[in-house]
Amino acid sequence: MMPMKRSLGAKTILYPHPVFVVGTYDREGRPNAMVAAWGGICSSQPPCVAISLQKPRHTYKNLMEQKAFTISIPPEEYMAEADFFGIASGKDVDKFAATGLTPVKSEVVNAPYVGEFPFVLECRVIHTIEIGVHTQFIGEILDVKADERVLGADGKPDIREIRPFIYDAPAAGYVGIGAFLGRAYSAGSKFMSR
Amino acid sequence: MMPMKRSLGAKTILYPHPVFVVGTYDREGRPNAMVAAWGGICSSQPPCVAISLQKPRHTYKNLMEQKAFTISIPPEEYMAEADFFGIASGKDVDKFAATGLTPVKSEVVNAPYVGEFPFVLECRVIHTIEIGVHTQFIGEILDVKADERVLGADGKPDIREIRPFIYDAPAAGYVGIGAFLGRAYSAGSKFMSR
Image (cartoon, rainbow over the protein chains, first blue to last red):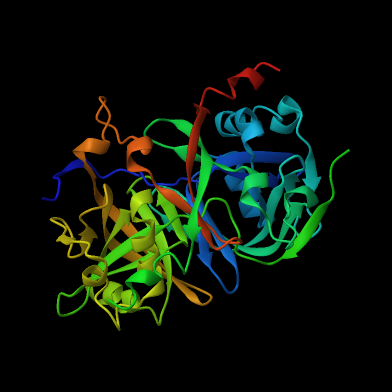
């Protein structure tokens, strides 16, 4: 017997919500970082990532002017800093100075990333799409960079070393990454011959 | 001293990648389910979620015809079934029959969800956007439904009960959810007065 599902209404709850730290410069070259939980990969070729922002955000203006951004993935040990990036506004405070984190200028786009975070995407804005109260920015991923220490022997990034975490919207909390569960394109093959 | 970052090239690697099981009907009302790892919330009002698909996918045709889909969040115990939804094509096989999972017709859109999965979004397509090799479908979330057993005493969905997992692209594997790390809009407040 299938359990009954309860209706929770039209809400933006999904699993997982990411914690993307979006780095931009303003017109004077001042770095800013904000948190985007609305976003994800949206194309394989060209490789693109989408992030959605509301117009009052300081980063919105920067994105419109510079057409460039980075995404720095915060590791668990910088959860409080990442949370601050989501609380404070770059209009009021230099968030890098307040947290002591280091804005590093990307070599490929005019945007800063968080030097202390081990995994970074560098993107140029190729589309903007209005969706309700949000503007979706489509960023072409020009390069991915990672600290040597988070790369495995095969040269690939290792999630256990990066230690990303996710945003749990209903609980308004952050949750870490757990155990390896199984291989993709493999675990399901047992259903193939049925 | 900041560690040097190594360039990995222009790749679609991010943390986390979701595992969204997308449910649709074809013209004859046959249910299908596929896995989308390219997607995320893209607007708060109206509440919208974006998923990106390539045109050869069986679900692409269904989405274009029905303008409706669901997202069912697979829990850990159905990892193999979810993986199968990503391996097999609805052109060749009835994926619900093959896995023994139950297609349940949504009451609000013409699309099926996976009855055994505890958390579901019901969406109607309001935009399609071409981005390189992918088409991005913007779905307005008309309702969210959850099994009673995954709701907390406050009526909110509890991630510990839903047990979602994420896709680790470089490892081609699935990774579970870990420990609660801290409160959002709170953990970072200590940087406020600096």
